[in-house]
Length: 616
Ligand SMILES: *[C@@H]1O[C@H](CO)[C@@H](O)[C@H](O)[C@H]1NC(C)=O
Ligand SMILES: *[C@@H]1O[C@H](CO)[C@@H](O)[C@H](O)[C@H]1NC(C)=O
Ligand SMILES: *[C@@H]1O[C@H](CO)[C@@H](O)[C@H](O)[C@H]1NC(C)=O
Ligand SMILES: *[C@@H]1O[C@H](CO)[C@@H](O)[C@H](O)[C@H]1NC(C)=O
Ligand SMILES: *[C@@H]1O[C@H](CO)[C@@H](O)[C@H](O)[C@H]1NC(C)=O
Ligand SMILES: *[C@@H]1O[C@H](CO)[C@@H](O)[C@H](O)[C@H]1NC(C)=O
Ligand SMILES: *[C@@H]1O[C@H](CO)[C@@H](O)[C@H](O)[C@H]1NC(C)=O
Ligand SMILES: *[C@@H]1O[C@H](CO)[C@@H](O)[C@H](O)[C@H]1NC(C)=O
Ligand SMILES: *[C@@H]1O[C@H](CO)[C@@H](O)[C@H](O)[C@H]1NC(C)=O
Ligand SMILES: *[C@@H]1O[C@H](CO)[C@@H](O)[C@H](O)[C@H]1NC(C)=O
Figure (tube, rainbow, N blue to C red):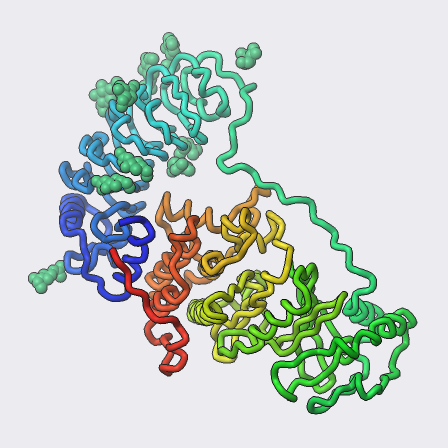
């Protein structure tokens, strides 16, 4: 079964049945646990599903084997019983850190040929390290620090060609340090042992503290600094964007800046064409403003605003220009304004920059978008196209975007976004995108899914806006910006958004909702952290609740739902496009998290494309 099929297979398994179970691995785990004392938090019940409910156990996608066991701080004590964990031959990750495990390094671990990460730090292991490390050819992380291991560091460690971290600090290791010439090695800590001799040349690139607390000769502090764990990404210098002087909506900003917050607007009644009637408003007090309106009035006749919904939102360009406007945000596609019209209605006007397509293509795309009517898709109300100005008008959402709800006003006085709300936002967004993906014969692509383009509808569900504009534009977000964190890896090269790149972006959004972190953020030390990489590394290395937003930790009984959503998010944000699920699939998985969130009417159900049958 290739990787794609197996991924899809597990999705269908997740939805249809939960029967598959690695019976022998389960028994091995039970044998292990029953022979060790442990805290009552280890919920390994022989009658429950090992892959689904056992804390700290991860199965492969086929649910045929256990591939990871993570029991940090689980109160385990005593030696690891022989012939238990060693039967889990498919194990890739073993984390038993921060327990009270005694005895020698378990010899049976040499059976775990697929082991990549081994965390046994902060226990009471003693005796020698295993002599032959080369049995674990894929081992990448070894953390055995804070134990009582003695003897020497085996030379076979240098056979681990994938090794990236070797942490043996705070043991009683003695003897010489072997020449570990491994290019992938990024982290080394041998401090506080009883090692002697010299630091081999190949390891001189590591900082001196990695060797401190030993009896080494000629270790001095003038080593070149260690390579950082993650290459430090530097933000490109902020480009100061030059706003075009002749920009029409620039007038609005000018008006606001000069304090003309509200200028009288005459609303055009039901489809009455203001411009055609030749009525001129006379509340103009700035010369500059006068001239600019004059400049554009000539072209206005033939470039009228095109409305999609009849009559209940009728205004012309001039109304828009005169409305009091406030900048909501500047995105990669242009600046977005909130425009308050005189009749107290408020719309969002997006001024598109760098539109690369001609008028005809633009209009065709708008016609497609204007027809989309769905509760989870922000309706396009109107558009305007002229040589030097392209505008799209849509509804205004009082609460602001999901980005501002999630990230805005952290700290005092913040009303946190609870789990139910996040789940509804995620499900609504998934439905909206799935609906978009079946438009235009399945060819419509959103192209710019990000939290600042998701709003919350009256029922509290996510609602997708800014659809299909990506195909009209030339600009893509510059690296290092928050927006670039949603971009699928392949889009960097192809510069072409697809359904599967939309799904990647949606995956990032899910991770954002779960972690409360931006897709790209800077951690301490100014390092730029990519959310997807960070989540993957946390989940791969240590299964902890650390990924989840602290705001969510106060709600009880949501852990399983969060983990389910995390799995969906990670599947969507898979590096390879063909490993990502389809959007209709995602909708069903999302609805599976909380069955009552399934749509009640069969009508909205049918919006999701028909299930696909998978061959295996
Ligand atoms: C599991 O189920 C069997 C049979 O139904 C029962 O005898 C046993 O006590 C159950 N074990 C636990 C731990 O609940
Ligand atoms: C080890 O990993 C490989 C590749 O992922 C897989 O084909 C193999 O079945 C695994 N070994 C065991 C014992 O599961
Ligand atoms: C190591 O990983 C590779 C690639 O994932 C896999 O094909 C191989 O089976 C693994 N090797 C061993 C011994 O597992
Ligand atoms: C190894 O364990 C130590 C002690 O718990 C910890 O500080 C360090 O971050 C760990 N390193 C890795 C790579 O796991
Ligand atoms: C390691 O420690 C054990 C006791 O835990 C001792 O018997 C053994 O001699 C020590 N080995 C070395 C090389 O120090
Ligand atoms: C490294 O691996 C090779 C082949 O797997 C083996 O022959 C050799 O003895 C190993 N070297 C050490 C130092 O263990
Ligand atoms: C080793 O022990 C010292 C002192 O207890 C501690 O500060 C340090 O973090 C430990 N090193 C590791 C890698 O755990
Ligand atoms: C460290 O090693 C030396 C010999 O190299 C030995 O004499 C000494 O007892 C060892 N110290 C500890 C604390 O193990
Ligand atoms: C340090 O090593 C030297 C020889 O390598 C040995 O003579 C000395 O006793 C060691 N010191 C300690 C504190 O282990
Ligand atoms: C420290 O190392 C550098 C380069 O390896 C060497 O030139 C220098 O003499 C050393 N200093 C001491 C105090 O050993």
